[in-house]
Image (cartoon, rainbow, N blue to C red; front, side, top):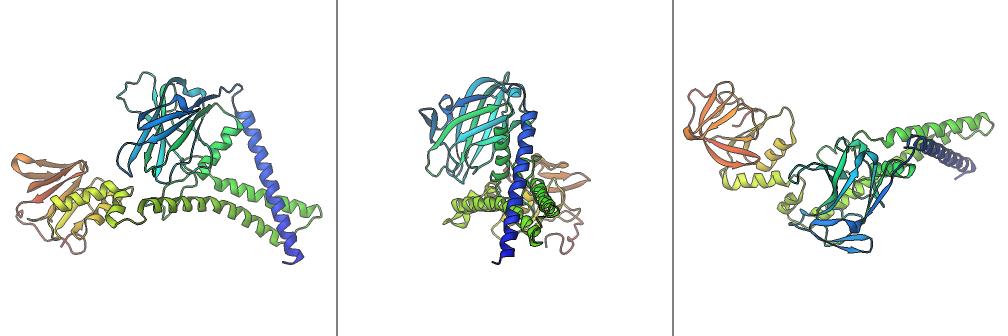
Length: 410
């Protein structure tokens, strides 16, 4: 590396650090002025919580979760604190506990004063794989308002035979520390990959939170401006300095993506490594669809491929119907409509209605399947499940034309 290159790297590093410091000062000033005049902070140690589900023991100020209920990988424990709290006085909630295994997820829940025990609880997912404490900006959840009677933590997944140490929670009305913690949680918290990740990965854990992308753009722009100003003052930098500034910011931003990729790799290894195909499907996030498809294959559909019309109250590509179609192969599936195509069904065909399907009615006493628009065929109910109902066409309706090639089952 020649002297010119060393000079360019030095200029780029100094400009990037100076730009980051200036942005930090702006952040510090904003939260110093924007916070409440009197912040009522509250800390509740883990030992004050109780294990409503699972087993836990107190060790000093901590609560050690030692037992989970259920079958792996869907085991769970619930930690609960019944205490009157004014949620509107606290903007930030910090959860201090040991890092969760890659196959586990945490959710904060709360019950408002006046709610009965059987009423639905309010909840907020907690980002996983965050270094240190996890801080949430609770004002982003519209249900975080009014007096609370209970607050707790749901831990679900595969604990990998590990004990989890829960130190407690902190509630704060404002402040630079909690605000910075919330920002870092949003940027570094693991967001589990799903079917949409092939197209894009969200830059933050919660929709609407401040994204690191515009922050990185401002950081780079300010650093470039500092290099330019230094040139006007007689400290001209090599032209490659401008490229290096952008590269430094880009690499820093890419580290956030690499963190997500590494966390997903750890999760995939924990869930799927060394397991059979059936076991992998049973441990995936869409395992309920896989289980349903296996039930249909074993107790509803014939062993040989059959013509199957899959109905769903959606238009275009829908994950549930497309993934279920994949799991039901090699059956010959028409999967494009909300109702059966006019005049296309015939004796021996199957209709799978993924509930609810408006306009579709089955009259069990008359073994008649009817749908909006005048369609009606004799049918029998072959399989019923909370996800849907499978019908078999009992007789070939008169005047049924063959379905068009390439669009419907052959």
